[in-house]
Amino acid sequence: MGSTADGAPDRQFADWYAREFPRIRSTVAFAVGDPGLGEEATAEAFARALLHWPKVSQLDNPTAWVRTVALNEVRSRLRRLRLERRYRARAGEEYVPPPPEPYPDLWDAVARLAPRAREAVALRYVADLSEPEIAQVMGVSRGTVTATLSRARARLADLLAERYDPGRTGR
Amino acid sequence: MSLTDDDVRHLLAPLTPEPGAPGARPALPLAHIAGRTARLRRARRIRQVALTVTCLAAVAGAAALGPWRGAVGLSGPTPVPAASVTEVAPSTSEGPAGMPTIVVTRDAGCRLPLAADTSPAITLDSVARVVDLATDLLALPDADVAGLPDSATGGWLSCPPGVVPNHTGTAEPGSSPARAFLETHGYTPGGVGWSLGVVEPGDLSVPRGPGVVPLTLRDGPAWWLDGGRLLVWREADGPWFVLRTTSGKADAVTIARSVRPAPPDDPRWAVYLSFDAGYHGTPLPLTPTQAPPPDPAVSSGPAVTATRSAVPGRASPTGPRVRGSSARWPATSVGTSTPG
Image 1: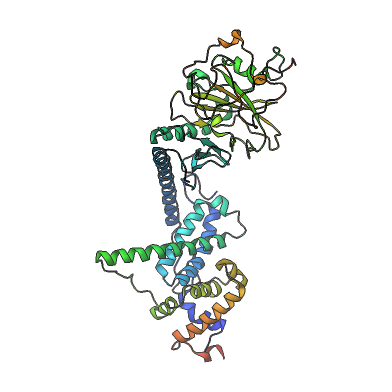
Image 2 (image 1 turned 30 degrees about the horizontal axis):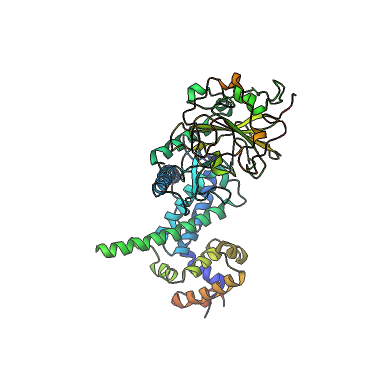
């Protein structure tokens, strides 16, 4: 399972991949505040899912598995990136940022959230997880999730004051 | 000022467009994922090799330093196919101080005691050979292992598939399962010597699955042979594992292999120890009543060569020994058994 005789992914994996990849990518990209890194980590997570598809497909929630793998991958890559940047700084190499994404102000606001707040917001508003589910994913209590989300909303309101239009939502 | 959930979703919507919506990125091509998976597979193989090399280096390095006293811990995923070295660490308190083991696993694993305390000559090459042997061995079907002829393997004690040696003691007065089996295969009591013992569950871990031997011999170096052979024997069914050490070298190690799946609730194991080239480590004590009687007729059997009969710590070249409290001999054992 997972791959056909010629090594290509089988239909079950392909369908699941097509259905879940975009949302996982959005969640992870948001959680890390970096669309490129989010996509890279998501692709890596799905590659691992394909590698272990016979087992992953039997899980109760393969999507949760791949999301967790992707988030772990992001953390791991961020650690490596920090090392890489330190090395480059010592070596006198200039860091060349990736090309700008659309909505740079939005991405900048996201990037300025604290990492845990960003992850909580991604899981709540992108992945559409409930607070108990987020608590499970992040390994914290539900109360912590509630507080984190509350602070994150306040912070976003500050960061995106110009974009924020209370009248739009009828408030 | 704060935001409602809907506010947040609205504000962030441009960053997370629904699939198919304007600005939404398509999923990466599936071929891209498949390519990454192939790379992961390759990387995993490379890591396995690297871990194996690391493990071997650790063993060789520790051996070079002399007796193992500290932990040389190494753990990780299976580093080689089929058999895998997953741990290098001193044995438990049950074993000799500082005696390292390599754990070779297929599913649950088995332990390979290394006589680093008595064999400082363990080398990277010798450990590599062990890994190779273990890999080959664990990859063999059970029947093939059981049927390996001695001559073809340089000393594997063989038991043709389906052949159950005389384990009822009926062949002759005083015979025992171990003795009958050993004699059938050219091993002689007396002469060079062979030893018999019994271990209880706990001494030998109960195998946890077919073809798996999580073997931990409590007596450590007592079972350590140089060029010898160790049979782990379930009294009712004949040989269960065949262990072998390499011949005549201080860097020998013991390899365990299940001949067949063991039952989960096996109440009792007998360990039959045969050696033809002396042994290292703690001598195997054997009380006189447990010694097999000298039998010139069988002691001239063909397959045994006494190349190291005067090993230090061994009181007599002809006396088999059983060590320690775990080496209790059943009532039907050699020298005391009754006709069937």
